[in-house]
Image 1: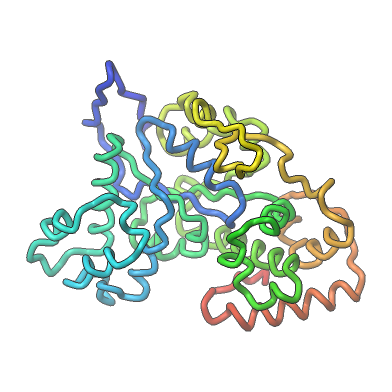
Image 2 (image 1 turned 180 degrees about the vertical axis):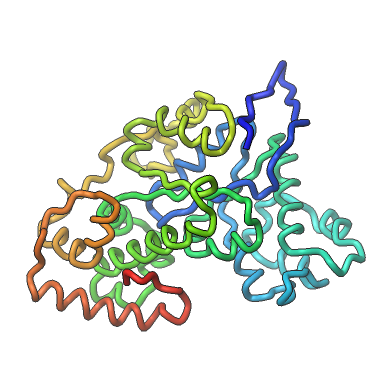
Length: 335
């Protein structure tokens, strides 16, 4: 892709250059990995708009909700989309969609979604539109089938820090906490859940190749935001702008009761640090469950060997969780 410079002049933006099809980008990763911060960085670019989490895109396609097995939309698609509570975030009217569909019987679902994203971009006065839905990390084959040229930013955070965030999150019941093993051992459940999601994303990256798939490390992003934002801009084919790493300026709130996201805090290393905030016994259990992925990612390990009693406990949780999710998720071979 040719590098796109910022064409804004005197408040006007020339968008006559050649551009990629929307959705231009998907930001994915295990929840609680910092994807909201990454979204805000990318969204701060004058050429790129990132939608709020959608969740419906692969779901409607795979479950054929207004979509045929061949990927064509039916006359039920508009009603089904507007019945989903998150769809209103796209800010497109029913009349606009009806007009776009017209009487066509050969409209692809991928083209309909692209039209919706194009509309979102026009509202934001930005030509490139992406999506940030973390759990799409396990939907990469579907995204590739729909838009084989789209780009993927996969944000990866040390799973032990993900656990520190997850255990305090009020929405944990919609993530790792939705599995029955959470009631037995939430830490091991989170470790296995993190390992599964990250490994699935890395496995399916082969569909896109290195020019369309890029891993971003959370620690690097908060430690050197300018360096990482330059790398991200280069990957996306747009010129770097300082607004990316300064996304929080003018928005930060000082209320100590607010979460990091609600307070619009700047990138801050060490807000979660498993080295100082996890007990040794908990680190040992996490590494028993996901140590192989920690090794693959180059993350530091504390316990090179795991006692049998800990390994047996983790295996019990692992078998139970596998039975619960294997029918819905295509588990990675490392499982």
